[in-house]
Each structure stands twice: as C-alpha cells, then as structure tokens.
Length: 227
Length: 309
Image 1 (cartoon, rainbow over the protein chains, first blue to last red):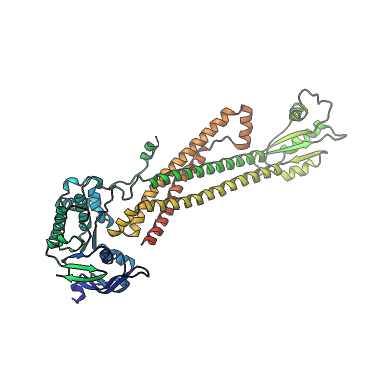
Image 2 (cartoon, rainbow over the protein chains, first blue to last red):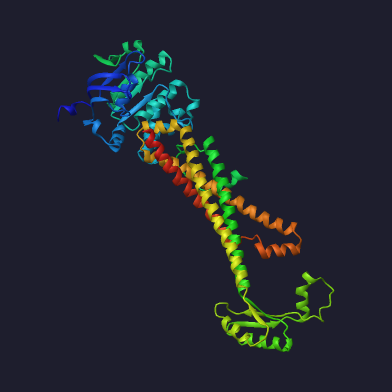
C-alpha cells in the first residue's frame, strides 16, 4: 500500500479563492486517517464552510492538490466525482430535510438515489431510525419534528448509505446546549460503531472541551491542527 | 369532477414522489398545458372538419355533370334533350342521365325571376343531369366530343367550382396546420419558462439531491416524471374540453339556425360532427402534448442542472 492510501483525505498546499477575490483558504496541508474524528472550528468567516465544500467536492481548489480515497480530485470527471461524492455524507445546521416526505422517506433518499428497491432498504432504514431514537416518528413529516429530531433524521440520512466520510456543518447550531452534547455523542457513536470518518464543524468551544478529539482550527483561511 | 377524472389517470406507485405533486408552479403548468392542449385540439378538430367537408364536396360535385342545351333556331329542344340523354347514357362510366322537366327548369330560375311568372312562352336553356358511376372511369372527353353534334349543347364538369372549393379548403387546412405549429412552438416556450420556474421553486430539492449524490440524470428523471404526469393530465383535460366544445357547437348550430339554414350551413361547412376519426385525432393530442411536455421539460431541467453545477 502506498503512503497516499494510508490517508482518506490529503490536502497539500491547497488554496481557494472565488473568482478574482481574495484567497479564502491559504496553504492548507493536512491529512485525515480513516476512522478518525476531527472537530473543525474557528470564528465566523474563517473559511469552515469553504473547506467543507472542498471536502464535499462541491468546489475545486484554486491551487494545490486534494487527494480523496487515493485519487487526485483535480483530475476527475463529473461521473467519477459523483461516484466519490456518494462516499461522503453531509449534515447541515438547517437540517435540509424535504418537508413533503416523511422521516422514513427522507432518510431513505440516498438509497433511492442509488436505485435500491424499497423492499431492500426498508429494514435498514427502520433499524437506523430506531437507533437514532426516531422509530416512533418515522411516518411524521419534518414540520412536525422538533429541532433535535430533525437533526437526528438528517444524521440518519447522511449515514444510511454507509459513507466513508461524514461532514457536519454546524449540526448543533439550531439546538439547545444539552441536545448539542447528545448529538455529538451520536456522531461519536457512529464513528465508533461504523468506523465512519467524521469532520464536525462547530464554533461552540464548550462543546469541544467535552470530547477528546483533535481540532482543526481555521483562522483567516489558515489551518492549525491541535491533537 | 375534474379531480375525480384526474384520479383515473395512471400514477406512479410505490414511494412518494421526490418532486412534490402539489406546487404552485405545477398547478400553473397544468393550467397552461390544458389551455394549449385545448387550442391544439380545437384547431385540429377544425382542420379535420374542413378537410372532411372538402372531400365530401369534391366527391359530390365530381360525381355529377350538367349538359346545357340552349335554344337554337331550327332545333327541336325535346329531340335534342333525348339525344343528349342517349349520348350520355352510352358514355362509359355514366350511371344515369336525366333531362330536367320544364317545371324543374323554371323552379331553378325562380330565385332570380320570382315566383308565379309564366315562362312557357320563353325559350329557356334546358339541362340534363348526368350522374357518374365512377368519376375516374368516366370518359368525359368522349361525351364532350359527341355533344358537339347537338347544336347549342355544352358540358359543364364543374371543374372550376371544384378547384375553387379545393383551393379554399386547402388554404383553410394549411392555415390550421400553421396555427397548430405555432401553438406547438408557443407550448414549448411556455413549458420552458414554467419548468425553469418550477426548478427555481424546487431549488432546495435539487440541492439536497445533489448533496446526497444524485446524478443530474436521476434528478432530471424525477422532474420528468412529474412533468409527464402534468402533460398527461393537461392534455387529457384539454382534449376533453375540446370534444365538449365541438359537441356544444354542433348542438347550438342545430338549435339556433332554422332548419333550411342549418342544411345550407351543413352543405357549406359540414355538420360540425367530428366523427370517430376526428375524435381519434383530438385524443391523439393527449400523448403528443404529454410527450412534448416531458421532452421539453427534461431538456430544460438538464440544461438548468448543468448550469447549476
């Protein structure tokens, strides 16, 4: 196995700018091992969302090299990028559930996209919903769910297709501190039981102190990692 | 009632549609497609009516010839009439020939000269009506040549009248087809705008599908299914309204106009009855509109998605 394959994600001197604007991310060099858990933190406007968009393969770097799952993402065509994106789950602060679908249908969406028949994915979705504590709420529409329930549904949707990497952009931003802690415990449990690599962006410093995971700190587009 | 009718249309079974069925853009598009389908079906129905009437006119007029015998000095009209009838009957392709009686001839002149006028003292031209068994087989040229032996006889094949009718009908049919084409273009443009509006309304769904790894093809397929359903529903409603329109017009023409006028209008414009073939043409609008909606929206969605990504 080559050195590159030891890491799930590798950034090498990566910079990002939008159009002719200033560089939002500067000289990012880091690597993420499979099965690891990292917090991504920093003040508002530090570039957390931009870094997550790079990791989600929504943007390409302006310079430098990004390697994911052993492949240089700069050389990939749209089809391959799409295949790689299916190995990445994403959870948003604002949940982004589809309001006209039930909790079950929202969670099953990634499997539907992959073309699996409902008879095949139904038991797995129900099992996961029960695991995140939404077994009783699977037929409810998102508008009837609480903030915590919505975020657990969003997390379940992000992991149902067993992604290698789970990105979470301020997933605790819309819930109270107690629930925030429980949600991060849920991410930790996913990391431990499924081995999913997790990068969780948050600016809630008290939350970080409660968990022993390394922190990627972005400040004015520059990254430092604290183990 | 419309909802009950729409409920009869085929729907996709299984999981709930990813693109919601009830959205403002969807309802607007349904109304638009219904109107366009109605206009297309009415135009097509009109074209079918005119076409059918023109064929009927042409066939009726083409099956009849008229021999006119003008009074000539030294000629005995009754003898000339008999000769003309005999010549006509001996011509290949002629089914029957009959000289109009003096009373029938006078009746023909009544609209111009008025009733109650004694025409027995006036020598008026006389007519022989010739019915052809088969216009294609009839040897009209031979009849024309033979009639040369009768002084004052001439043959009217109604060719000029028929040609004028055919030209008029052809112009109406072509105009109808042109209008149909323009309605098609307007439908495509309207669907493009409505689709882009629907895509903008459902932007959140597109984004979420992209984030969870859906391909543009998958997303376009989801929207296409929705638009195909709208196209089917709109096409069905438009065709239904068009059939009702023709039924109502047919009934109105029969009840508003006096019976003589109805008969004349019927001769000139047909009976406003589409018949089964006309109905079939109108119903053919349903799949055409549905496919047009589905293809147009699919191409618009694919373009929108490639622009978005």
